[in-house]
Picture (tube, helix red, strand yellow):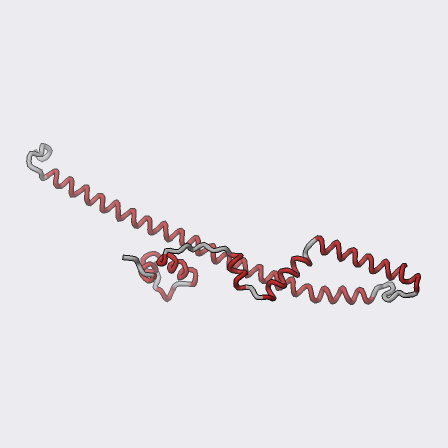
Length: 181
């Protein structure tokens, strides 16, 4: 007879079905169905992610890279060089020192980039919570499987001892037995 989820909850966890949390319910369901419990946390997090989540991850990946820092430094130096010497020579200087327009653009970039990076960090924290939950499910499944194996071994040992005891009783009561005298 295959035990039900309710039977397993009572026997292995000492809880009623209603008292189980989501992870425990998932593990017991997997045991009843005979399916593996382990899942890749990154895959689960990606399934739950929205377009905005993926976009914030990409922006954070680009904005937090050495390539971005080097390219951005080159653009800033080019901007300052153009507006200091080259364009001033031709009278076309559009953002003279102290580069107020450049400061406005940098402030705007920082104002937009910071919340996007925070969204990406929040998503990473959510991924970590999913990973922790899946780790707990895996550990719980392993522990419950070990408990179930212990119960099986205990039952096998008791059955074997009962068989040996019955055999000893038969041998002790057999006619012509020398140990009975």
